[in-house]
Length: 431
Figure 1 (tube, one colour):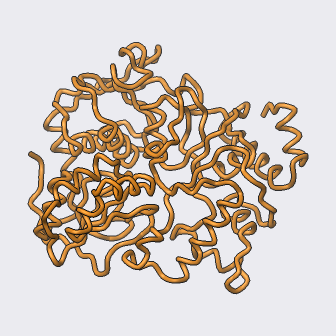
Figure 2 (tube, rainbow, N blue to C red):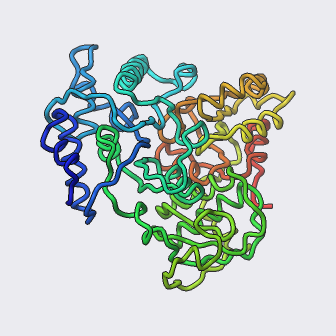
Figure 3 (cartoon, rainbow, N blue to C red):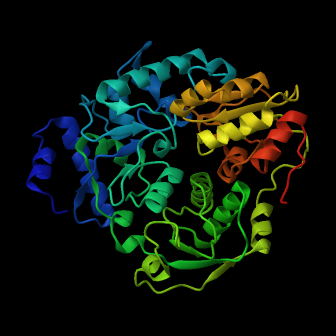
């Protein structure tokens, strides 16, 4: 790779061993990807220090009783180093994604005392090295809104597809190692969606059905991801401007079923003023058509549940916006959940604070539900005891819950999910 003098000095150790290791990791990563240079970034979002369930098993190996050497933890889990590195403060503005629990709801979520302590240690260490512990999969909802053309280094597929497509920022879906290294040196390999040519559309999707509801947008996203896999779809035929929530659900579903990291909607997203702009000279592949039949086909993918008795309802994947929390609160106002059904609504901590102030949280909790932050049922692996059947309004959550939590899961609209929480039975479906 062609390094600048500054980058070479960091690689040679001028700024310490940890930054040198991080730079070496990025150089090797970039070479493997065919990148010729690095690009500056001051916006990193990732999963740091391994507090999530999949990495907890490694923590005791680098602990001295109850005292954990968090520099050693970060070195191993986030920088792939067998040697302990003293971790300096991050160079780039860095934000943490989903955590292992909501500290205010840990008891409700059934989180053990050991995990609670690990989470405290991890968050304390993140704060020490300058990582903003926003603990949400939707940083763009709480202030981290990248500008058009800004180079970022983000993990979390639903977040990357949103900032690439809706905001016009530039990021690939990074892993824990590359994001952590980027945080320390403020660099990321220049390849993929950082480059103009990769961002051009590849497949046209002609939308012939009036997609309206959040469920419609999620199903369309899932269908597009199934068909187009990792390419860049260009949607035409959208006659109304979708809300941020609909775009959030569309991208999250497309990223779950196919791995899409960018899409264009002609006349809506910033790099698709018209069809020619969206394709940027790329030859168009055979056009796909999305209509009512395709909507029904997409709904048919979600057939993991058959028992109409629902005991767990999950809303907020990706994390719910204030608009979504308000909708749930209004649907529950003055009502009471079925005694055998739990309702958990996940939203960023900053938005929960607003929901508390406005009164949305009170309405949901008076009905028997919970508003939670920092975590997610599927990724944090938290749930009530003895769940048999779940329901969600998120195609992404319906994709992952059966795999990660082994829950047969119904997919429906937010209204249908709230109704299931109130009655304990599923009566949803396509309208």
